[in-house]
Image 1 (cartoon, rainbow, N blue to C red):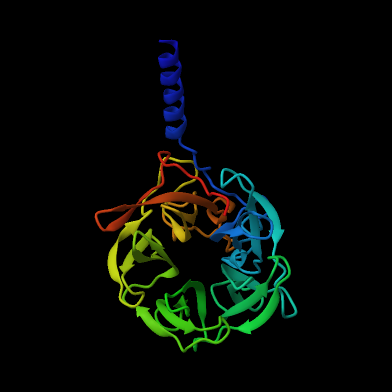
Image 2: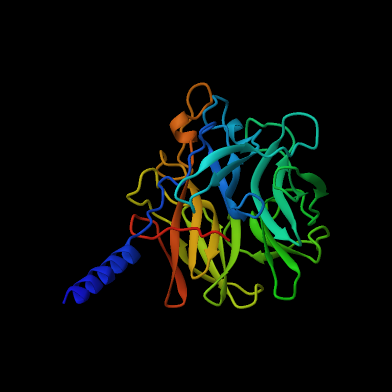
Length: 334
């Protein structure tokens, strides 16, 4: 009898332990220097054996006219040593390749043949209003700290931002990006070596959007794009033809600062789990709802942004998102 009781207690303990959810931090990350984290990309750092997040470090806590706080940004670094349960600030990447104070937006990182490749949008200088010519640029590194400038990503556009990459089954790379000279539609370009790219072609027409992200999950290819009121979801069998699905993270959750909806995100697939990691403007009713004062500035509350996360679930041939308190969040060591 004693053995039976002990076995039952052990089984109960294992059951309870396995059912315990590892609660996602909310917000997942808040930049302690400028309070303006946006456009995250999350990946395993093979060198330091931890999870890294690179992001646009907007200067949200600095008073400046109009949207100048969105310019002059470096790429920020956050690190997690506990499988995503907490994150801390590591600094910024040293990417300046021209004189002056310049702008970097929306990083993307891929690892290929022992080398990290960083792609990001670059704008010369700091602008008070939405302006300036954005170019996609390329850097390489073996340790994620020392980056070598490799030049412009020539896709044939004079104003392109928000690049994401995915390696196709045939070993070539495909990039998706926002072409602001073509109605802010999503375009594609292909490369065999990450250095030379084909002229861009439209991948998805129709509504304007930004921040595309492509990933593989449950035997399909998926793409999300930021429509500024949540993420539009697309599904594909071949990375060429895309089927339009519904919206993800289109509403606020009950978690702290997780509103009004998700913006410019990343997706991390680990085993049978997929997590969407995005930023929010928690003090706005919509992402575009900002109010300028008599000096031509937005308030600090409206400028600030934070990083949040949710879980993607496969249901009935599509994906749905859980971004409340009821999902298990764990980024395993790779």
